[in-house]
Length: 326
Image (cartoon, rainbow, N blue to C red):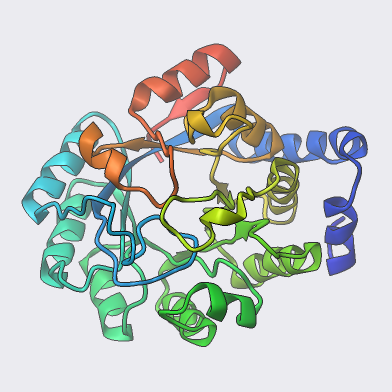
């Protein structure tokens, strides 16, 4: 049983051989008990890469002048998403930078169209006032994704200078209070993070009762203040966190679109995705953006989230059943 912070620390500090022997098989069984051999595949659209924020680690930060910015008109977003629905995709993830000039009425129009198409609608559009979360729910949004990134307030405030930890948590609690499903999670092994802080992140996800853990290891992004650290999050900590999350919250979705040892392969590395799945992850994405725009949706470098062929190849190679009816 994993019940206390010390239980989590024991796993995070566990030698790799012991983790592979004593924890990984239990996490895999927990995933299979909930989902069988199915890996969930969601459509995804990054509808604007404009962002007003200056997060020290994010490639889409306002200060990255090298990035080619775009906004996709609501009618074009709707066309992409409803086409995915016609091809059997029942879940769509709308993700964006915090773009104050992307009309909120247009966003509501998008949500209504996707709900009318019978889709589960998940959004990650940043911090809003309560009235806007209420409007999104009324339009048909099912889930809102707002990552706390790091549970230590001082670290959060330093790394995310455009907002505060208190403001982020207030928004998260508003989402929960309104009855929207909450997806939230952390950046694993960012420069300076301690294992104790990582354990606190996991405990916060548990306390929040999340529906999806969109976790990812820290990856250096060009033209960000942290790029010169030449540090990347350790994969062994990624797999340990995924396994712990699966064991303490067996019903949640956990991102399987994860990097491997070769960052040039991005998040579409079959071996890396399989390793995450074997640790307990179960959610992949099909990027609906045309390739030129997808390349500029660069929260991280070498993102490479591609179309359904990646999921099909993963299925053929490792035997997973890909499920778009979620």
